[in-house]
Figure 1 (cartoon, rainbow, N blue to C red):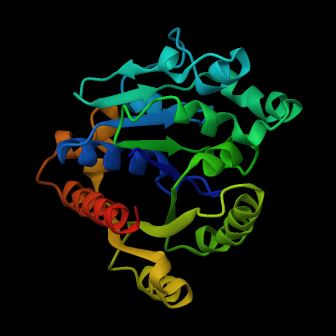
Figure 2 (cartoon, rainbow, N blue to C red):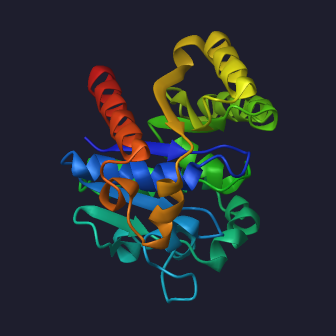
Length: 256
Protein backbone atom coordinates (compact mmCIF):
# COMPACT_ATOMS: atom_id res chain seq x y z
CA UNK A 1 0.00 0.00 0.00
CA UNK A 2 1.23 3.48 -0.90
CA UNK A 3 1.12 5.99 1.94
CA UNK A 4 0.50 9.58 0.82
CA UNK A 5 1.79 12.24 3.21
CA UNK A 6 1.45 16.00 2.76
CA UNK A 7 3.81 18.41 4.46
CA UNK A 8 1.95 21.69 4.82
CA UNK A 9 1.60 24.89 6.80
CA UNK A 10 0.27 28.30 5.84
CA UNK A 11 3.31 29.85 7.52
CA UNK A 12 6.41 30.04 5.36
CA UNK A 13 9.91 29.31 6.60
CA UNK A 14 8.97 26.47 8.97
CA UNK A 15 11.00 23.74 7.18
CA UNK A 16 8.31 22.20 4.98
CA UNK A 17 10.69 21.65 2.07
CA UNK A 18 13.54 20.63 4.36
CA UNK A 19 11.28 18.06 6.00
CA UNK A 20 10.06 16.69 2.66
CA UNK A 21 13.63 16.29 1.41
CA UNK A 22 15.10 14.96 4.66
CA UNK A 23 12.24 12.61 5.53
CA UNK A 24 12.21 11.30 1.96
CA UNK A 25 15.91 10.54 2.18
CA UNK A 26 15.55 8.85 5.57
CA UNK A 27 12.72 6.65 4.28
CA UNK A 28 14.78 5.62 1.25
CA UNK A 29 17.74 4.86 3.52
CA UNK A 30 15.38 2.62 5.53
CA UNK A 31 14.62 0.60 2.38
CA UNK A 32 11.46 2.23 1.00
CA UNK A 33 10.62 3.55 -2.46
CA UNK A 34 9.72 7.22 -2.27
CA UNK A 35 8.25 9.80 -4.64
CA UNK A 36 8.38 13.46 -3.63
CA UNK A 37 6.10 15.99 -5.32
CA UNK A 38 6.94 19.69 -5.45
CA UNK A 39 3.73 21.76 -5.36
CA UNK A 40 5.39 25.06 -4.44
CA UNK A 41 5.82 27.57 -7.32
CA UNK A 42 9.16 28.59 -5.76
CA UNK A 43 10.40 25.07 -6.65
CA UNK A 44 12.78 24.84 -3.69
CA UNK A 45 12.34 21.08 -3.38
CA UNK A 46 13.16 20.69 -7.07
CA UNK A 47 16.28 22.83 -6.61
CA UNK A 48 17.25 20.76 -3.57
CA UNK A 49 17.31 17.68 -5.79
CA UNK A 50 19.21 19.26 -8.65
CA UNK A 51 16.36 20.34 -10.94
CA UNK A 52 16.46 24.04 -11.82
CA UNK A 53 13.15 25.84 -12.52
CA UNK A 54 14.51 27.01 -15.88
CA UNK A 55 15.02 23.46 -17.06
CA UNK A 56 12.32 21.91 -19.19
CA UNK A 57 10.21 19.87 -16.80
CA UNK A 58 6.60 18.88 -16.38
CA UNK A 59 4.84 19.79 -13.13
CA UNK A 60 1.79 18.22 -11.51
CA UNK A 61 -0.29 21.19 -12.65
CA UNK A 62 0.76 20.64 -16.29
CA UNK A 63 -0.30 17.02 -15.94
CA UNK A 64 -3.61 17.92 -14.30
CA UNK A 65 -4.57 20.45 -16.96
CA UNK A 66 -3.50 18.17 -19.81
CA UNK A 67 -5.08 15.00 -18.37
CA UNK A 68 -1.75 13.19 -18.54
CA UNK A 69 -0.62 10.45 -16.12
CA UNK A 70 1.76 11.33 -13.29
CA UNK A 71 4.37 9.00 -14.74
CA UNK A 72 4.95 11.58 -17.49
CA UNK A 73 6.45 13.98 -14.96
CA UNK A 74 8.55 11.68 -12.76
CA UNK A 75 12.30 12.30 -12.67
CA UNK A 76 14.99 10.16 -11.10
CA UNK A 77 17.47 11.71 -8.67
CA UNK A 78 21.02 10.90 -7.60
CA UNK A 79 19.52 8.87 -4.75
CA UNK A 80 18.31 5.45 -5.87
CA UNK A 81 14.59 4.88 -5.13
CA UNK A 82 14.01 8.60 -4.51
CA UNK A 83 12.03 10.07 -7.41
CA UNK A 84 10.71 13.60 -7.98
CA UNK A 85 7.88 15.35 -9.76
CA UNK A 86 9.32 18.87 -9.98
CA UNK A 87 7.66 22.26 -9.91
CA UNK A 88 7.85 25.05 -12.46
CA UNK A 89 6.52 28.60 -12.80
CA UNK A 90 3.19 27.34 -14.15
CA UNK A 91 2.29 25.82 -10.77
CA UNK A 92 1.41 29.34 -9.66
CA UNK A 93 -1.37 29.41 -12.28
CA UNK A 94 -3.19 26.56 -10.57
CA UNK A 95 -5.00 28.80 -8.10
CA UNK A 96 -6.77 30.48 -11.01
CA UNK A 97 -7.16 27.57 -13.43
CA UNK A 98 -7.98 24.54 -11.28
CA UNK A 99 -11.21 25.80 -9.64
CA UNK A 100 -12.76 26.14 -13.12
CA UNK A 101 -12.72 22.37 -13.47
CA UNK A 102 -15.50 20.21 -12.08
CA UNK A 103 -14.37 18.25 -9.01
CA UNK A 104 -10.98 19.94 -9.10
CA UNK A 105 -10.33 19.07 -5.44
CA UNK A 106 -9.99 15.37 -6.38
CA UNK A 107 -7.70 15.70 -9.43
CA UNK A 108 -4.49 14.83 -7.59
CA UNK A 109 -6.11 12.00 -5.66
CA UNK A 110 -7.34 10.41 -8.88
CA UNK A 111 -3.91 10.78 -10.49
CA UNK A 112 -2.09 9.23 -7.55
CA UNK A 113 -4.43 6.25 -7.55
CA UNK A 114 -3.11 5.35 -11.00
CA UNK A 115 0.47 4.82 -9.81
CA UNK A 116 -0.54 1.27 -8.85
CA UNK A 117 1.60 0.98 -5.74
CA UNK A 118 4.88 1.86 -7.45
CA UNK A 119 5.97 3.64 -4.26
CA UNK A 120 5.79 2.92 -0.55
CA UNK A 121 5.58 6.61 0.32
CA UNK A 122 4.56 9.71 -1.60
CA UNK A 123 5.53 12.97 0.09
CA UNK A 124 3.91 16.21 -1.08
CA UNK A 125 5.61 19.55 -0.42
CA UNK A 126 2.81 22.12 -0.25
CA UNK A 127 3.05 25.88 -0.87
CA UNK A 128 2.73 28.38 2.02
CA UNK A 129 -0.86 29.29 1.23
CA UNK A 130 -4.17 27.50 1.61
CA UNK A 131 -5.65 27.43 -1.88
CA UNK A 132 -6.59 24.93 -4.56
CA UNK A 133 -3.13 23.29 -4.62
CA UNK A 134 -2.96 22.58 -0.90
CA UNK A 135 -6.59 21.48 -0.86
CA UNK A 136 -5.83 18.96 -3.63
CA UNK A 137 -2.87 17.64 -1.67
CA UNK A 138 -4.84 17.16 1.54
CA UNK A 139 -7.76 15.50 -0.21
CA UNK A 140 -5.25 13.03 -1.71
CA UNK A 141 -3.39 12.36 1.55
CA UNK A 142 -3.62 9.72 4.22
CA UNK A 143 -1.61 11.78 6.65
CA UNK A 144 -0.55 15.40 7.16
CA UNK A 145 2.65 16.59 8.81
CA UNK A 146 2.49 20.18 10.05
CA UNK A 147 6.04 21.53 10.53
CA UNK A 148 5.75 24.19 13.21
CA UNK A 149 8.35 26.42 14.79
CA UNK A 150 8.07 27.09 18.50
CA UNK A 151 7.44 30.75 17.60
CA UNK A 152 4.32 32.86 18.12
CA UNK A 153 3.46 33.49 14.46
CA UNK A 154 3.99 29.84 13.52
CA UNK A 155 1.75 28.64 16.35
CA UNK A 156 -0.87 31.27 15.48
CA UNK A 157 -0.96 30.09 11.85
CA UNK A 158 -2.19 26.69 13.04
CA UNK A 159 -5.69 28.15 13.46
CA UNK A 160 -6.19 28.37 9.72
CA UNK A 161 -4.64 24.94 9.21
CA UNK A 162 -7.07 23.36 11.66
CA UNK A 163 -9.93 25.03 9.79
CA UNK A 164 -8.68 23.64 6.48
CA UNK A 165 -8.36 20.15 7.96
CA UNK A 166 -12.00 20.28 9.07
CA UNK A 167 -13.00 21.50 5.62
CA UNK A 168 -11.09 18.71 3.86
CA UNK A 169 -12.59 16.09 6.16
CA UNK A 170 -16.09 17.33 5.36
CA UNK A 171 -15.43 17.48 1.60
CA UNK A 172 -14.31 13.93 0.97
CA UNK A 173 -11.32 12.89 3.08
CA UNK A 174 -12.92 12.11 6.41
CA UNK A 175 -9.98 9.92 7.46
CA UNK A 176 -7.28 12.59 7.10
CA UNK A 177 -5.00 12.40 10.14
CA UNK A 178 -2.38 14.93 11.16
CA UNK A 179 0.54 15.44 13.52
CA UNK A 180 2.56 18.53 14.36
CA UNK A 181 6.33 18.41 13.93
CA UNK A 182 8.33 20.93 15.96
CA UNK A 183 11.13 22.25 13.73
CA UNK A 184 14.04 24.71 13.95
CA UNK A 185 14.02 24.18 17.70
CA UNK A 186 16.63 25.78 19.95
CA UNK A 187 16.51 24.12 23.34
CA UNK A 188 18.57 26.97 24.82
CA UNK A 189 15.76 29.40 24.00
CA UNK A 190 13.26 29.73 26.85
CA UNK A 191 10.44 30.88 24.56
CA UNK A 192 10.99 27.85 22.34
CA UNK A 193 10.75 25.53 25.34
CA UNK A 194 7.62 27.29 26.64
CA UNK A 195 5.80 27.23 23.30
CA UNK A 196 6.79 23.62 22.66
CA UNK A 197 5.29 22.67 26.02
CA UNK A 198 2.18 24.69 25.13
CA UNK A 199 1.81 22.81 21.83
CA UNK A 200 2.10 19.44 23.53
CA UNK A 201 -0.43 20.45 26.18
CA UNK A 202 -2.88 21.85 23.61
CA UNK A 203 -2.62 19.09 21.00
CA UNK A 204 -1.66 16.22 23.31
CA UNK A 205 -1.07 13.19 21.05
CA UNK A 206 -1.28 15.44 18.01
CA UNK A 207 2.42 16.33 18.30
CA UNK A 208 5.10 13.96 17.06
CA UNK A 209 7.77 12.84 19.52
CA UNK A 210 10.41 13.81 16.97
CA UNK A 211 11.86 17.30 17.28
CA UNK A 212 14.08 18.85 14.61
CA UNK A 213 16.66 21.18 16.08
CA UNK A 214 18.56 23.99 14.37
CA UNK A 215 21.52 22.52 12.47
CA UNK A 216 23.77 24.08 9.83
CA UNK A 217 24.00 20.71 8.06
CA UNK A 218 20.35 21.12 7.06
CA UNK A 219 21.23 24.39 5.32
CA UNK A 220 24.09 22.75 3.47
CA UNK A 221 22.03 19.80 2.29
CA UNK A 222 20.03 21.56 -0.51
CA UNK A 223 23.18 23.23 -1.82
CA UNK A 224 24.74 19.86 -2.68
CA UNK A 225 21.35 18.44 -3.77
CA UNK A 226 21.29 15.56 -1.30
CA UNK A 227 19.09 14.77 1.74
CA UNK A 228 20.90 15.35 5.02
CA UNK A 229 21.13 11.62 5.82
CA UNK A 230 23.29 11.25 2.68
CA UNK A 231 25.14 14.53 3.12
CA UNK A 232 26.05 14.37 6.83
CA UNK A 233 25.08 10.91 8.01
CA UNK A 234 26.24 11.37 11.59
CA UNK A 235 24.90 14.88 12.12
CA UNK A 236 22.27 15.70 14.71
CA UNK A 237 19.66 16.53 12.06
CA UNK A 238 20.31 13.26 10.19
CA UNK A 239 19.69 11.31 13.39
CA UNK A 240 16.55 13.33 14.10
CA UNK A 241 15.10 12.77 10.64
CA UNK A 242 15.88 9.06 10.90
CA UNK A 243 13.94 9.05 14.18
CA UNK A 244 11.08 10.87 12.44
CA UNK A 245 11.10 8.30 9.63
CA UNK A 246 10.85 5.45 12.14
CA UNK A 247 8.04 7.24 13.96
CA UNK A 248 6.11 7.66 10.69
CA UNK A 249 6.75 4.03 9.69
CA UNK A 250 5.46 2.80 13.05
CA UNK A 251 2.41 5.05 12.85
CA UNK A 252 1.59 3.80 9.36
CA UNK A 253 1.99 0.16 10.38
CA UNK A 254 -0.31 0.60 13.37
CA UNK A 255 -3.02 2.46 11.42
CA UNK A 256 -3.19 0.65 8.08
